[in-house]
Image (cartoon, rainbow, N blue to C red):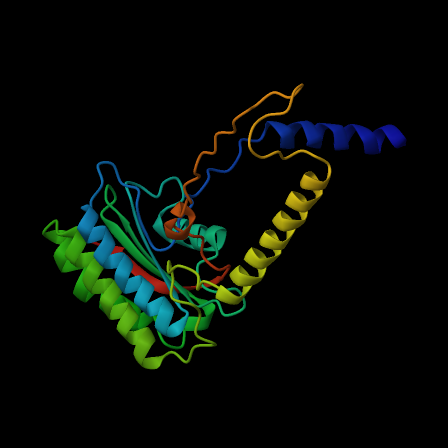
Length: 253
């Protein structure tokens, strides 16, 4: 009887272990991701769309992700958009206020995926109209930048005009405010510790003035300055953990 239970379980386990892994969707970051080869956006075009997304995020806390790929296969663009949205958590956690603007170059397809929290502002009909008006005509002429910029602007304007956000977050990608009180406190403690160490070492005879004493060896210490690395402040960050309810629209160009 036990064998009748164990054998099927073992067989099922072997079949499951040999099952091919599901293809992965890409990691995307705040805010623009041009993963097509060759890339479709110049550096200044990338930056101008990023600035739009940053401003929407700053004003409303909503997160717009822009993604260009060569293909969405084997999923197809609708499933690919939903999986990418969920895997990367576009939108703030608990607010689900994210939007994914996706273009597949080889398939000549587009999709705008909307998070739960923005479905009242960006319903399917409105998103479809934006896509057909801003994305399709420009993509048909090969102008990817204008297509993405105008679409991001239209989506962002709808959010700014109609979305009631939560607390305004800090401006994205800005340097953290310098805390002078904390700095002075830490600096004062370090000076005090330094004075204590010097006093103790003088008392023990580790310091001498006006020459060297017999039996001691003079040594010199070389100090090298350390550059402060601020690269982490401008590094592209992750999205906030939002979810999509499958709302949005798509089509071909």
